Image (tube, rainbow, N blue to C red; front, top):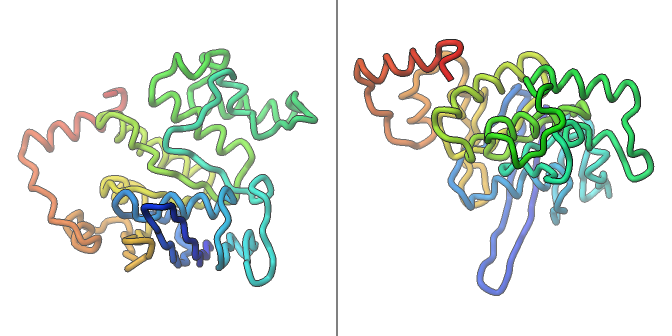
Length: 262
């Protein structure tokens, strides 16, 4: 169960933004769906402990990470939350293996213990990164960088995985492949996920529940569910109906879904 009720105001000389984000769900994957500037990333940062709200609470699986009234505010490192940033935030001076294992080290203990080293090696193998373990991020493709960032987020065995527009930096052909890969991650690790996106295709591919966000608030929650028709999802999210696909488009979609097509 994820239970979020946050109030936060950010302002400068030219702009003020009030966040009043409230939602709760026990669905495996919850999507915060809405346009850029709606407050979705601020919400993830507050859940992760990267910024501090003025009021409210964050509870994950019955564990309180933040509660203003109770005086609870766990440091980010103690929250048990994995974070996949939109730009991946990989350390350019570290190798792939060092990036994946970064959260398992500290300034006191710079070398991985035996168990942590085995976990990092297992994640590298799972995400097809073993051959790239000694490479630096600058030499990787967009899809490879995303896999490194995802492996790093999973290395600490988080209780919740936060995904900030995980496919926004990828070309359209690669997005579908990595959506499928992320769905497999969900099935294997069974870690609850909170995904933010403005792309309905992400909702269709991954989400169980979509919370529609406008101007810093959830205005409605949509039980997407498996098998819900595309047109119904579009209507529920307040979008125009999807265009009808012709025979050629359907054939291309089938070809792209074949193993080894990308």
